[in-house]
Structures are given as C-alpha cells and as structure tokens.
Image 1 (tube, rainbow, N blue to C red):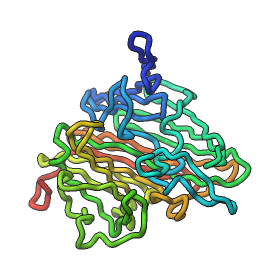
Image 2: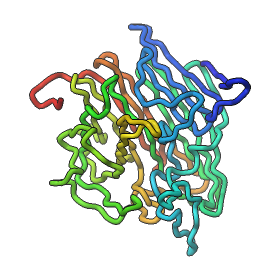
Image 3: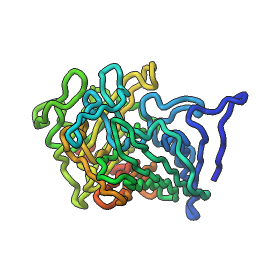
Image 4: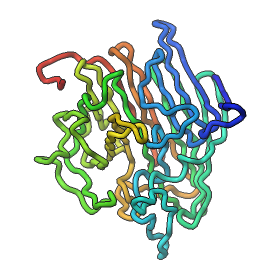
Length: 354
C-alpha cells in the first residue's frame, strides 16, 4: 500500500493524506486501485488498469460536488436542520446555506484516523462527537479492501452513547461508463414512486412515477434528465437486490445495486460538473433512509447503546463480463446494507437501449 502526505511547496492537500490500495490479478494481470482520502474517508479515485470508474477530483482539490463521500448519520437534507428528540427541537448546523438545510451528515469533512493498513486494505476511523444538533457519540469504522474483483467497503457503526442514536447511511458516487459522455448514457431505475419536493428540495410527499418524467424504467438518456430526486418502492431483482443501470450506446454499462437495506436511491444530475464547468454528471446514491428521515422516520434506524453494525455494498465494473470489478459496502444489526456498481459489456439485442 502506498501512503503519501500530499504537499506542494510545503502545503498539505485539502483532503489530507492520500491512501492508495491496489491488487493485481494472478490470471490476467489486471490491476484494481483506489485512492482514499484522510479527510472524509472519501473515494477520490477508482481505476481498473488505469481506467477511471468514477468521477474523480484532483489531489489538491476538494470534492465540491460531494464526489465519493460517505453520508452518515443522514443522507441528503434535513429541513431547516431541525428535528424533534425527547420533547425538544434540536438544531443541526446549516450546511446548505442557500436552501437553509443540513445536508449529507457529519463525517464527510472530518479527518479520519488510520486503524490498520496493508497493500490491499485500509481501515479508517472517525468518531461523531455529541453536539447540540446530534447529542450522540457514534464511532464509524470504514474498511476499504481491494481485490482483482473490486473494492469492498465496510462501514461499522457503534453507538457509544447512553441512549439509542438515529443513524442512516448513504453513498455519493458519480458514475462513469468508460469514456462515454454521461449525457449519452441511459439510466434505468426500477421504482414505483418518487419523493415530491418543494422549492428548497425538501420532501412534501410521494407520488407514482407512472406517466411522469420520473419514470426511469425505460432507460432515458441522462442528458434529458434534471433530477435531485429520491426514489422509493424499488423493484428488487430475483436475487433480492435493488439494481440501477447506466448503459452507454456501445453496450458498456454500470450497475449500482443495494441489498434489502438500501430501499431508497437518490439521483442527482448536473450539467455544471466540475463546479463551474460545463459537463454532465450523474450521482446514483444508494440510501438506507429517505431525505429528512430525522423528521419523517422513513428508513431511519435507532442504534442501541453499545450496538454496532457492518454493512455491505459497492461497485462492480469492467469492460467485459470476465473483467468485472466489484465495490461493496457492508453494515449489520439493522445497520447492514450494501451497494455495488458493475461496468460490463452487455449482449446486444433489439431491447438494449442506445
């Protein structure tokens, strides 16, 4: 494993140390490599034989669109940053000032401590300390393990408080389908309902996708979509997983999936990626709870004192079926879930999009 303290003329990288882990296949020599940052435990880079599989941000830059970040103990928005607990109204820090909301949890900007490392595995730890808005101590230990099949990411959450703590997990990867411009990629989400939002993107209800532009079951082009939308009532695959597909016209595809714990998915599209740029990008975000779950309770889990969990999920990606690569995430005890994406060559048929 390569560990570097990134500096330029004595200036540290904004995301701290850069942890590179990699593994090489003994059969075909393919190399899967990932770079994880000290700050946020963010997946900054993921490659197979040097080909990027996710949108990356520069070593001396910041993830201005939340690229590859961990979203704990909530994902997406908490309206006004306020939520009720034990007869009181608690106030989280407003981290989305333009809309007056708290967004994406408490660990994505915090330095993590290295627990252990090897050439192909890294474990980072961060503690959420009690605050006025979240009066709980929760340890988050994340293990990144690379193999020729991919990158497995395991989150283990332990409640160090005297009372149950509300927790949810989300991930924020911007997907790539090789070099294909994302506006030309088709996105399929098999969901029966979506979350209706107000002008500040806070939930106000749910509605069926049928007959609306929110119906992504036929795989519309990403370039046609303008979404910052949560989907629910997902249709599981025969194996019980929830699978979301991005497919290029040439048949390459990325599949993002979550196990039974990831009952929700957020899709965010932007035409100004990177920040201030002019490129289309799409984040497919597996989630264990809906936005504003601290108020609605939709998908929110309460972790008992001393209880912990580890949750599976990830990406599966490559240029052909025999070159598939997996990224997984894990969590147990009611906090276990997993997500994965897979890039592969699909067989061509009249029903294939593109």
